[in-house]
Image (cartoon, rainbow, N blue to C red; front, side, top):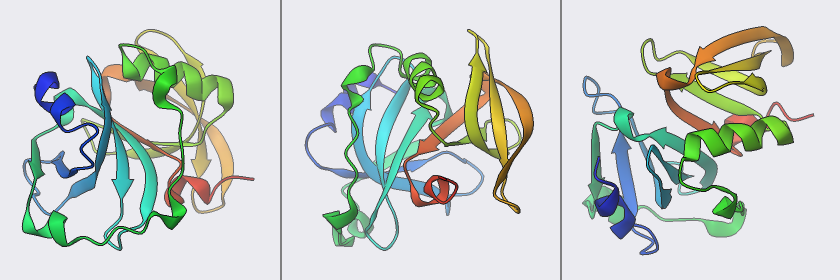
Length: 171
């Protein structure tokens, strides 16, 4: 995905649809591109009901298609009453690397989607190295931490945070 093109969409408050699955066009994320980096974009996510739903970091290599200016996006009524502010100035050039460090230090609850199997894990990063991270995962049935899982950073499709799915596990 062309970073220069993505940068054109920043600051215009232009809603975009981002597709991550070439085999299922019914699954996509809607939001505002907040920042574009060498390896990923930061998307301020909007739910179907027009409410803000946190942020998602999307690996540029995982993006199948981006749409903007569509009838659907123009008709979406945005409710900004629950908009969460997030200081994204902490990130430098490589979003994934900086973000992983930030989340580990601040014990942020994340939802991580894997590129290979579309497996979603929710938890907190407890260790990270250049190629891997260790997530203290949450058992979503019992709402408690339940062991650790090792993930390859290169296999991450997207990371969501500060949204309703992640916030339900805050204590």
